[in-house]
Structure formats: C-alpha cells, structure tokens
Image (spheres, rainbow, N blue to C red):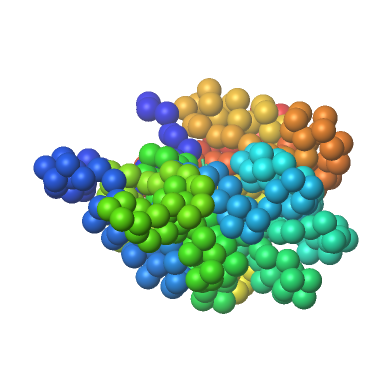
Length: 365
Ligand SMILES: Cc1ncc(COP(=O)(O)O)c(C=O)c1O
C-alpha cells in the first residue's frame, strides 16, 4: 500500500502543458502574461485592490513589515501558534516579536491577551489564520483600529477563507498568502501580498522592482533601494491554473473534515472551532487529541500503517531560539503544540481507513 500523504498538490502536468510550451516558445520567463493574469485573478477572487506575487509567504511578510517601516527597536505582536516564519521576519528586521497567546478552541490570537500586551512600542500586529481559520480577526482588527495599529494577516494557509463574506486579502491592512506545496494552491515555492491601500501598493510596486519608479533617459529611474522577490512566469502559470478550481478544492476538504469529525468527535477528539460568520478552507485537518492519547505514539503508529501525520504547528515562544532569547512561553500555544494532530486531507485520502487505524491504536492503550 502506498503511503497516504498529508497533502498532494491539486495540479497535473497536463493542465499546464500548453502554457509551459507557450512560455518556452516566447522566451519570457519573468514579468509576462502569466504573472499579470495570476495577480489580476487574485485581485478579482479576493476582491482586493492590489496583489503582488512574490517568492514565498516569508518574503511577503518581510515586505509587509518593510511597508510599515518596522525596524530596529520596534515591537510587533505575533500570534504564537504558527510556523516560525511569522516571528522570524520580525526578528530579522531587528525588531522584537512579542508573543500573543492563542485560544484553545479556534487556535487563533486571543483578543484579551492581545489587549494586555499593547504598548507604545508596538508598531504592528501579525494575526495568523491557523490552518486557514480566520475566526477572531474582526475583533483583533477593531481593537487595533482604536489604537491606530496596522494588522498584517498571515493568511499563508488561508486563501479562499472568509469572514462575513469578505475573503482573506480584503480584510486586514496587508495580507500574505503562501503557495508552498502544503497549501491549497501550489506553485512550488511562492506567495502573494494583498492590500486595499494604494499608498502601500505604491511602495511595494517600487521596492519589488529594485526601487524603480518611472523612467530616466533610456532606463528606469531608481528612486530608492529595493529587492527582487518576484514570482516567475512558470510559477504564476501554476497559480492561475489552480485558482479556477479553488472553490471546489475547498468544498472537498470541508466535506472530508466533516467526515473525520463524524468518526473522531464521539471518541473524544475535538475539532478546531470556526466562528459561524467564517468560512474555513481547511488547509489542514487538525484535531485536539483526547487526554489519554500520546501525540508522538499516535503519529508513530499511523506512520507504521502508511499514514503520514504530524503535530498541528509550533508554539513559537517555546522554540529553542525564542525561548532562550525571550523566555516568554505562552501556555495555550505550548499546550496545542503538544496535544494536536494533523491528519491527511486531499482527494486520495481514505478517511474510513485512517479512522480505523486510530481506533485500532485506541485498543492498544
Ligand atoms: C502561518 C505560516 N506563515 C508563514 C509560512 C511561510 O510560508 P512560505 O513557506 O511560503 O514562506 C508558513 C508556512 O508553512 C505558515 O504556515
């Protein structure tokens, strides 16, 4: 039996064969029609004013912080249950990530904990849609609006999710997507920045083109320094080809998560809570384990039975680097890191089989 993987990309070679041939025939591998199409399609899909395609969510987050002028001596409030990139980008700019604990039901930033950590040094908040779940971001945005603090939505996992009908990309001041293979839309590596602010967009446009703005003589006028974090034509082709299918993909994943719930809730597992006003794209099927189950032992047992599984995600304040530097471990995030499991979720998953293995494991303890 082949191993059931956590996720398989929703794209085949046949879907992009013609487009690839066109790229090779034209010789235009960068800044061409596919990049234009994918960024336009993303704007339309999310109903956001501006979209920039970049090399990853990590570079997207870095550029968002630069857009807000974050640097040495600044502090940024960061949701503590996430992939390390969320905090690393703050640290990398010489600013301090201040960890905000999360709620044990939604896995997202706790508004009460956030309020207690706002000081004059806080220059931005990074809200993470854990596993694609945007629950609670509306409350965080309204707290931050009162204090005039911009919110970056780390929606690395959350393309297609929404709150009150507004899709991610059209909710926070700046939003980042990831197109890494663990995400719903895969371009190999890749990411995007979305914003409704034309001021931020003007900054990003120039910075992502080495600081160019307008022309000078025969060439560009470089009015500031900048970077090249741009996505290539081949990646953008993969992106817009899959975007067309995204709503169907999300529908299938929600169905599969519900099937898991039917099996697992009666035997003591808990699902990630999603507010009624939200749509959750189920980037990952994550569950809280019953007390009697040891996370490591279950993951190992599933592996032995050809099922890939892993922890939910990381308590950032508890990783060796941040614990040694700031010694400020957040209890809920730490608990979730050690008591959650991610189960496979994609077209080729046999939920019955996986739940049967889990039942077998329960009989061994
Ligand atoms: C919440 C979150 N933020 C950021 C990232 C970084 O994404 P990328 O690999 O595209 O840089 C990830 C990747 O898993 C993530 O889950």
